[in-house]
Image (tube, rainbow, N blue to C red; front, side):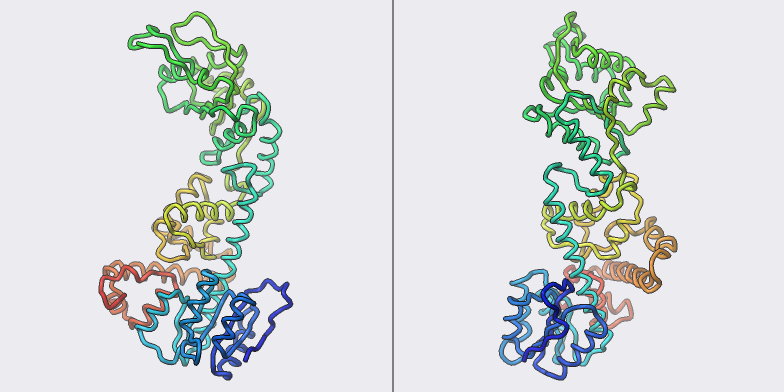
Length: 479
């Protein structure tokens, strides 16, 4: 028997829920409960075999199934559903509950295990979390499609108006020899912009050359840039080609030009004016064909007023200014960037399938990013390494210790509806408590439950609800 409830016309994009139970009364009760409490499309069947047909035809994203059924049982249905769609969320119900059966079901990939008779709020709470997971996975797919569409600017990820302005300017001036001064805060992608200018130019076939100006002492930087001839100074036993000659016919990036010593500023000005260099110890100039790009995160106008930067050099460099926006100026790009780094490090560290909880997404949007994209990259890399489940929480993004007030303080929570704020606060506390309890017990679930004043099954339900792993158990009975 198959029943359809608000199952739509094929254009409805709400999550699809399949209810499976050989008890018609249970099916009817569940369907009515879900219809009243949740916004989703529902199909119901009393047969495991019919459920298998619906897996392929209707492709449900969430399944609530009884475990013991004639014919194809709930465990077999779970396995088939996971084979067809590894991202499906399956809630397993049974009136024959025991710890071993629950553990086996969860190891097979079930999202939750619920014993009959069950409290209605309990199953609705679990279902709502499944539906939220479906929404987050769909959002991840949407972001992945956006990332795949951004092939014109490798390394860049963003659809904000500020980033579109950056892309437009790069396209306009890339295939010219004009000098570009790229400005912006630390971590905004200034070197990426320089590499994009080179990659989209006629010089792209030759290697891109870059030098970090503040990384070298003045005398070494001079020889690195302009080279020297044998005998130019003590220890100069052979000729050395400088970076300007290495970049002949290509592009040279002077990274953090604001730290260039005044003496070298004078020599650089001559290069930009005459298109010639003179290696140390040589008396004859050499012509160079090099496109010069420069980056800085400093206020060059203020340095000019203090006499620390040549005004004439500034105007030579600032022919076309390109300003890289901070994350604060492009908050709409944060979800796309976060997803990119999650995918990148998930694949790199064999942690694919991770996704951000809604609380984590809100934390990413509200957190200040003084280090901009580079800081976000490092935060998400750490979260991928430390994640204990497939869902990344604010705690794994650094919402702990000094950052806790930032994540759960009144200023942040006050921006949310009361019920949502309460939910986030309780979830944050619960995850932190469970982590501490497991740490104190050395990963032994039974000991952690006992120390917490909870029954073992109740403690395990909390672990599942808040995405904490039990794999670290040290006691064989806790596996």
